[in-house]
Length: 383
Image (cartoon, rainbow, N blue to C red; front, side, top):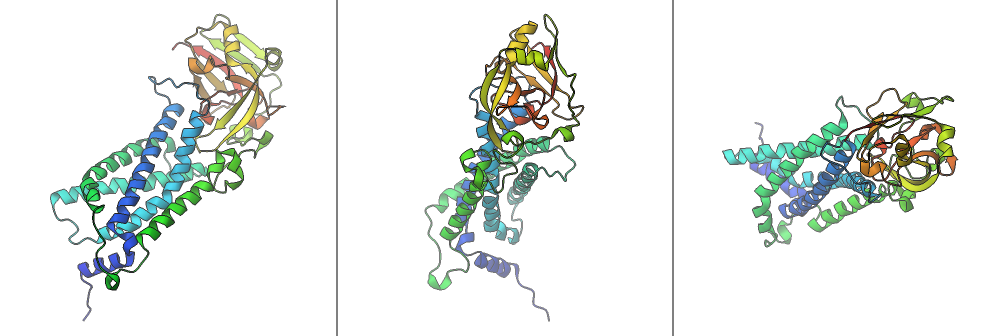
């Protein structure tokens, strides 16, 4: 005769294996940490999305210069550091998967059903986000759109979960652990679990933060790009070969659209204009950023020479024949800014082809994909 374990005994065994580290108070502390982390990720993710894909009603400022660098660094580095936290949280609550009976009422069934989009969505966000910063895309969908819309599902489910659990969590703080030395469960202590998780999160952050905080660049073991590493001491995401761009000795910059006079400027024409030098970072959506010294012509000087209106917008078009980001829009706050250049030189040398030779855009507080390389045309249009 085969003896099958009773569900209640199986649940008790699972809980004993989890030890104090897997109890509800530990889960509550980890849940608070996840709530803070996901809130930071949600807010910084919205900033990133609206800067990279600006809606018609949003006009982002050009200052402070490093705002996008800060928010996207927090988003990516904080997201990576959240992975140990999420795994620990799932470890503390997995015994609830074995609850018996699995559903006690209609309300309980709804509550359990609402946990699914929270857990599944959180895993989806962290796993696909990790793939994105590694430039690995095994999935058929467009990552930014999927990441953006799933964020609303996850954060909405998180708010509902917090509302459902708030009274229970508040009640835990005044409680005491049950059982004495003889009945103390196996496994790690609560303090040990929390310390281990905090250490793991801190370690992940430490070996990643150097991708945007240059003084710690040598520790950026998990970063896909490191400051100072690349052509002209600056990382490159897309090379000229990948973009299908080659050198063109006959290149000219066209300025057209809603202008008083159209312009066609050679590289020599641009170099004959007043030269300006700025120190600005490239900050990419994958989280890495690096400062560099750029030299060239102020975009506003070229546009003023073409006789544009002060409230005009400018579409910057690349020599790149195709690609989702071969063009970008520059709003008045950015093209009026004295730091916004049509860059010709990088770190004291003419732009390399991989960095956008003969001419590229560099402007403060813009995602790297909007710092268009290999510029062919400036098309001016109304607001």
